[in-house]
Length: 394
Ligand SMILES: CC1=C(CCC(=O)O)c2cc3nc(cc4[nH]c(cc5[nH]c(cc1n2)c(C)c5CCC(=O)O)c(CCC(=O)O)c4C)C(CCC(=O)O)=C3C
Ligand SMILES: [Fe+2]
Image (cartoon, rainbow, N blue to C red; front, side, top):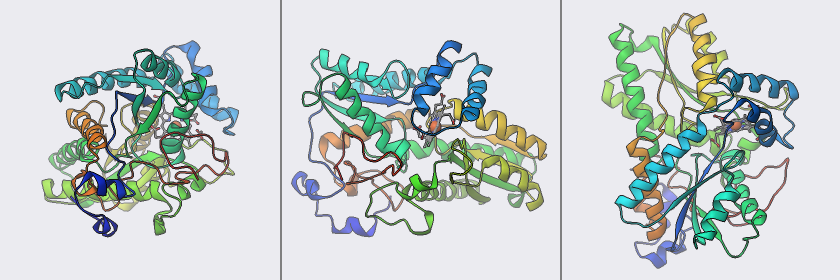
């Protein structure tokens, strides 16, 4: 566990002093958890309306929508993401019950049925007015942080529950061991399979893969007043820090450390708009010329094997690897791994207890992240500030 320099200034362990830290919210009483998913279609007739929901006002070209629709159609128009979130909801409920926390878990989505507004309405009807949100998204960026806060605010507006229901949100958990450990375990297995197949360490490459976002979003990810230097924002900086940590753990477990890099997938904006690069498939095509024979693709940006993983990695990246003549493994996502579920329960408990930063699990120098987003956090400069819950406003 690491503690970065600015945490050293945080006064010590009482709830009152914890509340003085910009990282820690005062102890709170919650009466339910609100799990916020992305949502996905569950039949062919859902595909286009779902895609319209996702891309409304986002300037995504029609050709891109048609292309993405074929990915869903290939699987009968069904994304597995809702089923995965149902499973996660149930596993989290069992873990919270096991700990005697008495918190029901409600689940709703940003883009598809059941919507967050329905979940909030249901919670209100049951008399639950102080909700702790968990977005199924580990890193800081508009899409993965602020947009979920806007979704919460919209859910309250739509249901006329502003002022009656309050929604907070757990911190971004990119470097929580519950999130990181499943990636480490799975990469370790992949590397063992490569050495068993006779590959030398210098013939192996690890590609950490995450969702590309517009570079302007990356630059504005995280708190407005915090500089992430050459990384180009909190989003890439967090991924790099997590990848470094995973590689250090795996090197210790395997006794060797292959070369690694961070790559991106699922770009969707117009070509004129810069998005984070390089693309995973472009890099795979270049690897043989660099002496690589085996590649491990680690979907470090994602929580479960949803469409971005099933299509963009398991179909497209795997095909690129085959064309390049590389042995390839796509490693596991956290899904409903018991350590991940326990990690989410820890994140809930630390909010109830206002656990001080020193006792909050985090594996990189960047963490533990903020309970309450800083003013202007993860701004979308194209869309401007929309009403958002669970943060300090600009
Ligand atoms: C950072 C990030 C995450 C990770 C964090 C998180 O998990 O939240 C993520 C996850 C996901 N993205 C998903 C699906 C889509 N994302 C799209 C479009 C976009 N994603 C973006 C970013 C992200 N996306 C952005 C900047 C856009 C451009 C439009 C916009 O500015 O909003 C589009 C439109 C078509 C296209 O791909 O162009 C689709 C269909 C699914 C569901 C998969 C399933 O159904 O199983 C999941 C989990
Ligand atoms: Fe996306």
